[in-house]
Image (cartoon, rainbow, N blue to C red; front, side, top):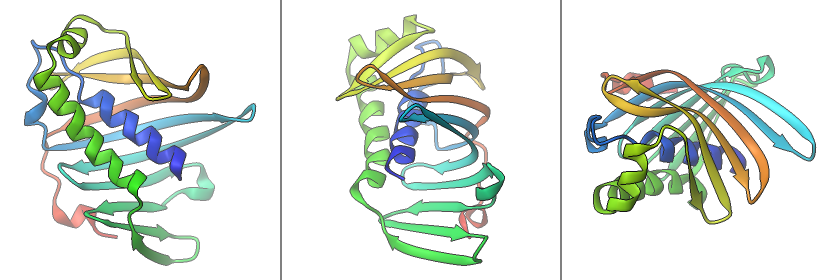
Length: 187
């Protein structure tokens, strides 16, 4: 779960990286996307696909699409709570959010502020279609950017822990600032 949270953390870091010609990142209120995640651990790879719904500042829903063994699992993060639905057991588990999961929202806020206040950081995003961002021991390698509804967004990302590849993410079907009803965040 920690690895998934870390990967989501980097997805959101990347999503808030736009060019000056693009719309201002602070106008983003909602995001929808499909994420194909290939993670690497101990010379093994694991691939999964999930749907993300995110309403700023603090509501995130992840619905597993693949692999079939996890299809339909739902993870809802809201305020300081995490709710997990496991369809195989028809079970809902509610627990307190751990610090790592809250860190996603904190990081999005941090990067929005950094983009707004740090001209060097902003210049990097304004001029590059491929670039790297370093956060502690993790390196985020943006491989491909696309213009979506006036926003410049990453759609392919590799994540490294120091020099070791830990994940390759491909984002698709990205929708920005479309109405997401409260009912879509229910389990």
